[in-house]
Length: 268
Image 1 (cartoon, rainbow, N blue to C red):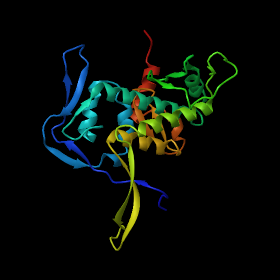
Image 2 (image 1 turned 180 degrees about the vertical axis):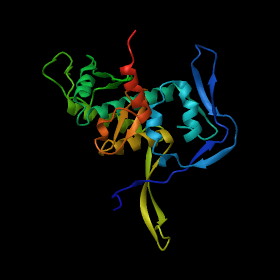
Image 3 (image 1 turned 60 degrees about the vertical axis):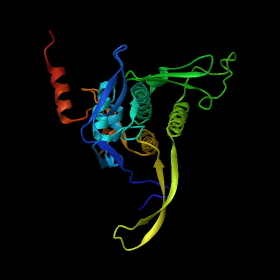
Image 4 (image 1 turned 90 degrees about the horizontal axis):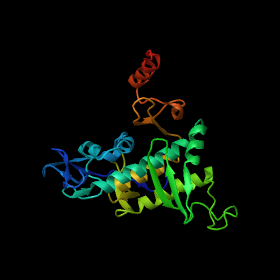
């Protein structure tokens, strides 16, 4: 059965065949830019890669960005453009934070949810600050996320975050992120049926760039039974599937075995 409503179109992305490199300004050692090494590009369809979301969540250092782009291409610019590395690094932190919040709302994750809610602070000027279990964090205006509270009359916000407010926080962040970098357009386009026997017209969602597509794909994911996990051994994010997917704690059998061997190793 096909989905109702607009669908994410089969979007093409140009990827440099020779890879990408970071640009250093020499100030502080933090890379400022990222660009293709050459002008040799090949067309690909990264939106169809099942690893796309968790690969972006695993960008925990600017040095991780070239490898990500080697596979998927640039995130916000034209193929021959230069990316703003500090911005992309921060976007990956936001993405990982929202993913952490969503996972904490899954059944069986009550202790994680309690920790997430405990680590949310609301300042007197209405700024929500969140620190997640993986160390990532974000700050966001509280307006539209939490309502006025009679508990704290001097600034109108309660410093006690609820599960419902966490849902609204996730939705607010994703909505605003999808509107940036050119946002999303909805187009009506002709298409052929699978057997090419007849033409029809369908509405498609067209993100302006890969980064917007990532946020859109996350928005669709949070409304499903699918789940992601953060490996209890290596710390990397992975897409969980199968029975009790939301309870899986290792990204692979190798990490599970390595973790159990660590537990059994004699302490010095």
